[in-house]
Length: 184
Length: 184
Image (cartoon, helix red, strand yellow):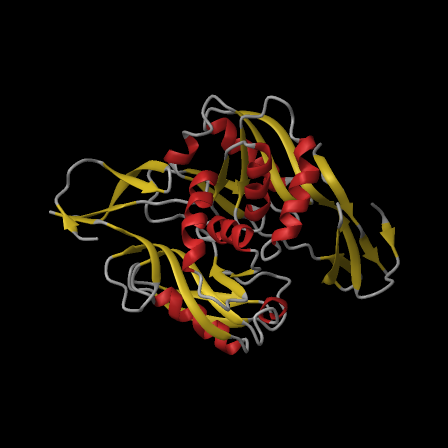
C-alpha cells in the first residue's frame, strides 16, 4: 500500500488469476480511491474467498459481517470454508424481536450508522468463536461495532479478516490486499 | 398454497433434501406467516438455487434483484447457472454517478421504498435479456419496480423467478414453492 500519483482513471486489481479495472472515485478533491464492488461480480467474490480462506483463524466457528456489500464475499467464504455466517442489518426489519442495536462510529463517511441483530441471529453467535469478515476495512469503526455485537450476543471475538484495506486502519486485521490511495 | 389453521409455532419447510423449521411471524393479529431467511443460511440458498435453476427462462443473460435478503440466493443462482447478476440498492451510495431512481409501491409494508441503480451497473443490463430473481414475492410491487429499472437501463425484461410466493401475487412469476398463510 502507499500513496502514488494519479496515473489513470482506473486501477488494475489482481486477485488470484482474475484482474479487474477498478474505477477511481474521488471522495475529496485531492484524493482518488479505487472502487471495489463484490456485488454483481460472482467470480471476484469466489476468487477473494479462496485467497482469504487461509486467513481465517483456526478455531473460528462462525463468520460475521454486516450488510450489504460484504454479503457475496462472506457467502463465498462460507462455501469454501464450510463455516456458517451471520449478517447484522443496517435497518430494523419488521419481524425483529428484541434486536441488539449497536451504533457505528464511521470515520470514513462522517456519519454514524446503526447495526441491528435480531434475537434469532444473536443466538447463533452465543458461546461461539466468531470472526468478523469485511470487504474493505478503512478506519475500523465497523469492525469494532460488529465485535461489540458479538460480545453482547454472548460470543467471543476470535478474529478479523478483510479482503482489502484502504488507508491506515486503527485496528489489527488480517487483510488479503491493500488498496492504493492516489493523492495529488 | 392455502389457508390453514394455526397448528404450531413453526412451519416445516422442505427444499430439496433440506428441512427447516420456520418461525411464524404475525404481521396482523389474525395472520401468521412463516419467516424464510436466506441471509445466514448457506445451505438453504444453495438448495433453493439448485431447484430454481430450471425455472430460469432460456435466453436469460443477466439475473437482477434488489438488496438485501435476496443477495445470497441470487449469488448461489449465479454460481449454479453461470449467469452474471446485478443488484439494485435501497439507499443511495456516495460513489453513485447519475443513478436510475425507481419508487416501489409495496402493498405488504404499506410504505414506499426507492431503488437505486448506479450508471455502471445499469450499463450491464443494456441490450440484455434480464430475469428478475426474488426470495419471496407477495404483491409483485418489487418485481414491477425492478422491471422498470431494466427497461430504463435499456434491457429487456425476460423472466421472473422467485423462491417463494406468499399470498396472491398480482403478476405471473415462476415460483419454486408457495408458502402457507395461517389465518385464525
